[in-house]
Amino acid sequence: MTKAKALPFARHKYADGSFKKILIDGKWVSAASGKEFESINPATGELLATVAEGSEEDIDRAVIAARRAFDGPWSKFKPFERQEILLRLADLVERHFDELSALDTLDMGAPISRTRGSRRRALGMLRYYAGQATSIHGETIHNSQPGDFFSYTLKEPVGVVGAIIPWNGPLGAAIWKIGPALATGCTVVLKPAEEASLTPLRLGELALEAGVPPGVINIVPGFGETAGAALAAHPDVDKVAFTGSHVTGQSVVKASAGNLKRVSLELGGKSPDVVFADADLELAVAGAAMGVFANSGQTCSAGTRLFVERRIYAEFVDRVAEFGKRLRVGNGLDPETQIGPLVSEQQLDRVTSYLDLGRQEGARAIAGGTRLKEGALAQGYFVAPTVFADVVDDMRIAQEEIFGPVISAISFEDIDELVRRANSTMFGLGSGIWTRDVSKAHRLAGAIRAGSVWVNCYQAMDPAVPFGGYKMSGYGRESGLQHVDDYLNVKAVWIKTA
Image (cartoon, rainbow, N blue to C red; front, side, top):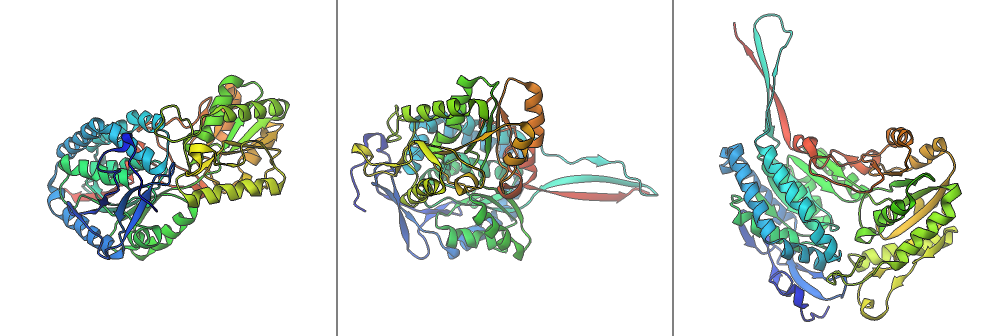
């Protein structure tokens, strides 16, 4: 790969082709093996940076540092002091947010309008977890034991957390793991995705500036089969928080068995997005389309199975297709871009193979269906927003997570049939309902087996509202009080008072 000139917007130390090290015990170090890998701009194929490639030895060094910090200085920090650190980190993220959002755009391709638009969520998460740091408490329990006994509970940090995050939203994903860990008094070894490590590494610099003690946050970029696997299996890691594919999630569960470490999994989806004939169709067209096309379809909860009531199916699907055709596809640094590239050549190959498969299965691409290679798009990993019509439930494009800008449009007639078909998937992460009938909305919201149900909207998120899945979409929750509880142990204390 030939290194090209940095784009004007990208002229800062994290996108100039320089070498990025690993963060262990408050210090920036090279990988023990001396290996490194390239971080590539998916819009242009240009080199952004070279990154130290963490291995099992580096993971072990990081876990040792995290354990030492957990048992030592970090354990002495009071809730208010942890809160102060999180608030300082939030202030630094706010001050450097334009840089961080540009890094996300450069490293994984999302339009700058999207990454800049995540400001409220990123800062909201850090400040939400800062608030939770001083809200952790146990309870007194009136027990029924004969005699004089006083009983109460304590909530204590689970310990060393191994956090493994994906590439489809590096800044937000890193905060989602680091925030609750710091709030509860845990320490972290973070393994970012090799496709998008630059923003988490920059966040590590800001964490040190915020006063996070050495060893509390360690960041080891590398590959899943080496660094990720070593972290999941490490005997001195007390919890693994993983976001990624269900296949890798299964491997994480197996690897955790050695010391029965706690595991939380936020995995993939094949979410149903249901449009009834009585819906506000103008609202539903845009919502259903961007419920998939946003982030080039690289969103775990994307509403990729679009169920449309039969009597409006043809009209509605055509309107979604026309919406997709009007979207501007291009380099994410262009403020006018609405759809950026896929994250890597490997992901491009995966998505285009599903485009071929859809046609082979008998679906009809009424929008997109191809890789885009014209002009400035030629060197990047771009796929046109795609709408497949005439999709039936047992097609692979209707059952398997594609992770690209691909909608599979399916018709339905009655709500009982719809419930059965909407739930006929191994996943259960998100779902959408578009209707003006509140009774219908409540009935369907209760019947769909998914962790989130959005009514007349899609993918609304808030730090106080839990997010997670059913079935093969994982267990545990991100955001909300349950997320914080996932990083805590509950201890029961009995005192005989007589």
